[in-house]
Image 1 (cartoon, helix red, strand yellow):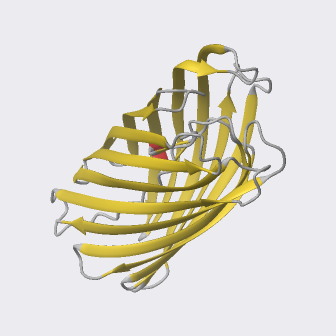
Image 2: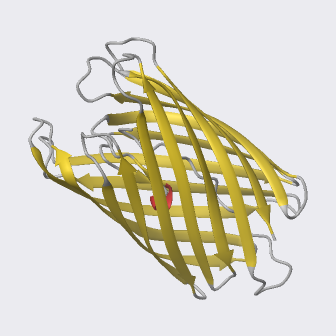
Length: 290
């Protein structure tokens, strides 16, 4: 589709000892429902299914993800959009720093931007204060669509650079409760568009209480052809995203198995349409770690 709308749960690795190898398998399914106004969005609804896999310990983490998207349009004469996304990433960890490199490939039957290649890098650091943790870093993304079209529908290579600095703090409130908060700033350089830069921000807060956790997310600003969630979400579209929010509720059934459900809304201007559109996203996940 014009958007790769996968949403990936963050993995909470549970290790029985300091250097235990942990494998995580996380299947997920998400539904998309777009605004009914035909002047605001040509999209009707969609379904996303995928699976995330990771393997690692406190020294490194290897991650893979695959998802398939099927999107329907309001006009039955427009063929369904079908898209496959493949992501692979490797992260290394030292005492007070981390690095990450990865690659995300988009295979789509949409002709607006076409297939995409997204290259992922990250460098970060962290400091511990007792049971609390302060983290910071910079994510970088380079997206290229060799058979894309610009905003005047001229066929050309479309590329974009994104720089995402972030800070986060994890606070141990008591033996049963922890709160994690993170703030990100996204700056995109897209010289092939009429406006060649876009800035947006994201804030995420997760509260853990015993086996239960809740995550609140919100974002604002402007994002076009952007990347989120460490390279696992790619907006391969010329739609202009403005703001949105989500709420996720999760529960650890035991140390190996957890479930979660998430609801979110995104507000955006769909390219080629008038007015502001929105979509609702419902995501369901299972996670098994061993």
